[in-house]
Length: 179
Length: 225
Image (cartoon, rainbow over all chains, first blue to last red; front, side):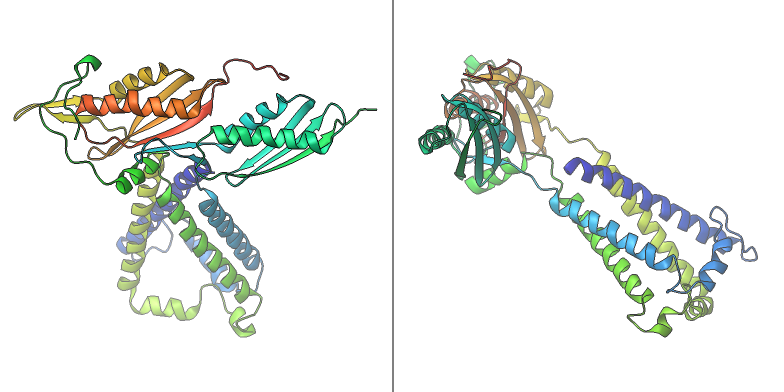
């Protein structure tokens, strides 16, 4: 999202600059050539009759307005959503900030869960506040196995100096496709 | 205060005492700022322009559908009242439009240049005396730190960058940890054996550091233990 924001910034900046250059050129040209009604670069003399005869309630004005509003909404969302997303860990000193990506924690948790006896596979979703594990067991998915998996995940979280400890939810299912 | 020279580290000596360290809160803020390149200005501009476009689009759509009156919706886009007003004082109208154009060019170029500009990596300047300044290039500093961090057990590989300004440099380190890495131990050794030595060697009181942890995926892992 942050890369998209930078690309959009470049694009919008260039469009603004190009529009500004055209406006400056046309205004200066109109000022210097007072008896000429044609534009120097922009054919605004061809557009003017249409703009003078088209009213606000005629097509395509409402469509263009809605399109502009949607583009504005998208830009607003990109600006609001381009936030840093990471999990903060406690550093050994105030001048050291330590972070990691949710996917890194998800891989660590997944590796730890898959290393549990009787677990066939695991799917892990991590956010800064929540770790969700869906594991598939080789055999029966009993509550004891779920407690074992949860303990393994809690043990891993204990090993990490997480600034905010996420909640852990574990769901153990029987392996799909077993007779 | 730090010891100005650490001879065994092989770094540049300096006789000048270190400046007093900023407060912990300031250091913490600078370390957080070093995590990634700031996108605050881009975000604010995107939100502002998004809001303006959305408001304009919605207002024009409402006007088109007659919410502000059917007669108003039936008026032409280029209203004769506006045309007459501009014809009445043509020079003022031109100056206003010209000013808007110049403003658009300046803002647009500034925003585009800001998006294209690479992130700054400041050199560290040490005062070597009354007429001497010792400059340690950011790349040399980053390479030295990377090499030392790589030597910490549990670190698969590491990359360091100097970021921030000349007056307030900070360090950004990305660590790719090995499977058997003890995170607390790695961070403690980074603090005690790398950053403390770097600060002492350079004679600087503080070096805010942002650390990003990744997993070293260069070695395959067994899927089932």
